[in-house]
Length: 212
Image (cartoon, rainbow, N blue to C red; front, side, top):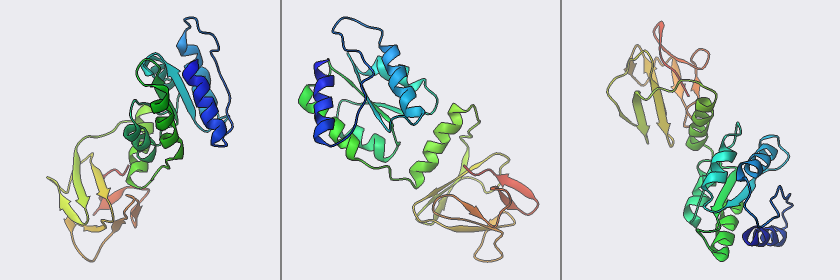
């Protein structure tokens, strides 16, 4: 309760509106109830983000993460909290009142609240996390990886493959080979296929790569 009240004061100082989903008692309580309430409010668009506190931050974080569409970060340091927003677009921050002091908790919350999601390759990975949540299949046999235009990988043909495109890499494919012209599809730096068919990269008549 003490840490929560200090975080509420911090939100006031930052000019941010907030809602308190409980608890307001100092006696032992069932934290999943409050983790669910806050996470549901974020998932439904009632709130933009949520900060949850329990003894370690772990239990209430697990509860909140069970709400569909919610990405939780349980943090006890500033760096992880900030990167969880910049790279993972986390919507819920959880902290442990028995793990971090109030001053550190306020620093963690400040960095998390002021960080911005960077998108780009991180958006693709967040989309993969969402796909897992939706019960979709992800393939771990990534056959091509591009780093600044340099191609690494074992094969240019596979039934179920994933092309990972990093930074500003762009390449052309034709007949199963990398070439500079006669391209039938291009992949931009965000992993978006143009010139292909229905989001899949086609080589000749066979679709050999699925794009995520």
